[in-house]
Length: 284
Image (tube, rainbow, N blue to C red; front, side, top):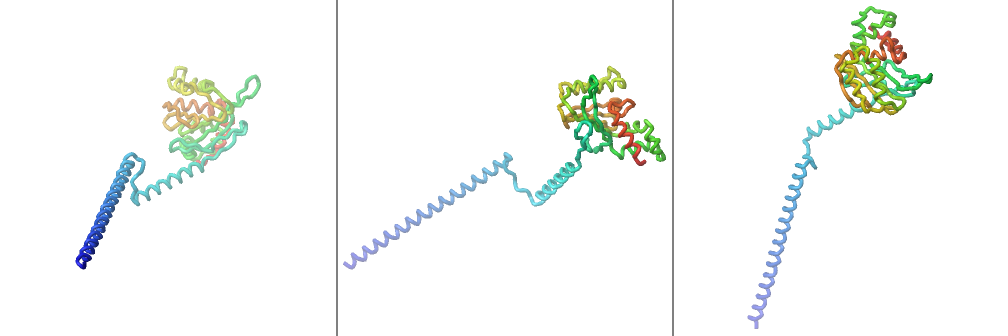
């Protein structure tokens, strides 16, 4: 009986150890499966991230130096934008009530408003307000041009009375902005300006024909802007609502267009009066 009892105990112990070993083997296998699953999941995540980076969905983390340069560039750009917005102020043209900017920029050229007025078209004795107009120049350029024309000892009275003061402006960058007081067809504006330009260029001028073609199919609604910018060297850039629509290289065209406002028979006399007063105040 004692032998039987010891044999039964031994058998029970063996079965117990065997069950433990089986459980242990199962746990190890499960842990291995879990590790393999985790490794597979991490691998898939890395592959997905690399694929998204290639498609541009995400970007690699920049180095600290790259981040600092990007931050400084962004800050600098923001400051330039803020400064650009800060200098744009508007004044009201009295007869039309329309606002025109105190300054305008074409490329690197910053020009300042020096004369303004309104184009009034008389029809059957009734004055029709067509547009407000401002003329812009760079003060330093004008001072140098006036010094070249008059010399350092010229008096304000001499400059005020002489047409040579306006000849000096031909040496400078000039800009004109028109802001419309009513809806106007582009063909009407082209015809009115061409009438002023044609005597200087001739009816067969290619530059004049190109200038007139810029307004084909254009309608200016009330409040729309039209800009002309004459660059040094004789290039005339035209912008409609701030968008450039063409550049024509012809010094005679530039001079003839601005003579419509500053020549011997200005379409808006008050503009020439304002400009004459300002030119006389330029310190040589």
